[in-house]
Image (cartoon, rainbow, N blue to C red; front, side, top):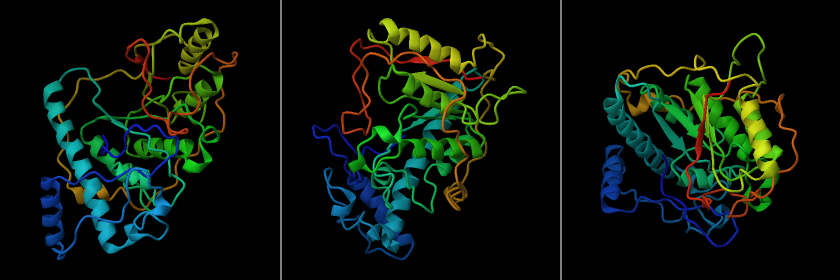
Length: 339
């Protein structure tokens, strides 16, 4: 669930991406919303730059830029609220279709981790995630999902800050920590996936740390843990030599070296979505922005194999992640819930 804000690029420079809302229907919706708050003269931002503009090269996203003005804040709230409303409607219809079946509805949230360290969070904002230092852009989404008993599936689970381009001001580890914390605070079943094909212990151990941020609880289930994980993806490289050894060890570690137990995190028959929430009720989750739950620096049950062969540490856009084509055309495999 995101705005179509960025596209594949040949260059390796992280950019701020672009607001996408310029069709006539969205323009009319924005004008009507602006008129309702007494500002029929307000227009869409014209100073937010283009795809290849870094935040500091725009008047809108630069530090203390126009995104902080009354008009800028109104636009960003409208821009992100429409995305939340859209997700709410889609999930409501999906709930009707699968009502009574043993399924877990889920929405995927993209890991837009570049420019996370700049005040405007420019790339996240253009994707529709209105996330600032004093405003949580993910917890309102989680609150919307809660009424549908839906899971939030996030990406970047294997990434470390140290692997990213310094020019991108990227922070995938902090972003994952923030999003998972937002979902857990709303009582969601949280899930993750890796963004890039990785077969090395460093990546697997990062995933394991995020799957159980406080490690194994020998007296019961961990307070915070992932409900599920999607591994991307099955390929010829995955089943080669040490890569396959590392992967099998990783799967065992995700289950805390225990045999699969179908009684762990069973999926109940889907119930009807809860009462509809107004956007104002949903947005109450945005502020105050709470600190994320603490995560251990390292997993307590690491994969200690040799380095995997192949796999990209740096994304095709200078460490920003994104889509990587599967040479086999295979789909990612769904791993059972973590213990």
